[in-house]
Image 1: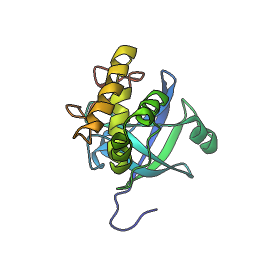
Image 2: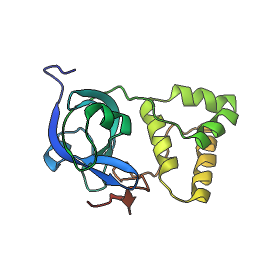
Image 3: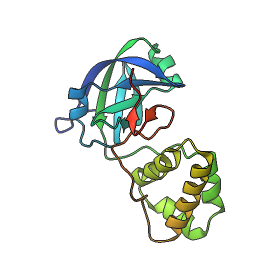
Length: 181
């Protein structure tokens, strides 16, 4: 997974529950090794279990990592356990999980929107999904989905006016910052 030119970020961190999510906060020194204060695509290991994901910003110049239930099961860890991680930043972003309401709007949109969605980078698709997901309000979410389709039907390839270093998951953040332990 590594070569002499790749940054390998190694750290130990406790797994914690925030809302329904299990996550690990990167220590400040590990986070500082990443190439961006925003999202970073990584290939990694939790113990000896490999995974690919996008590390999220915490809104305070650091990062956090969502630990899905399946990865926890494979690694034999859960909330309250301390775990060992190894992350390698990658240029190739995994595809985001597109929420059903956004996927439905995209599939009902014009062929131009569908073509642009396929043509933009995986990183750009992550930004659109993140922007849509960055609200707990159903009304705001519906508006963002509508704007996503309209902007993709126009000239936009990415959402604009979006703080890429903020923590945007409404379940685990307040005011753009990851909720404290």
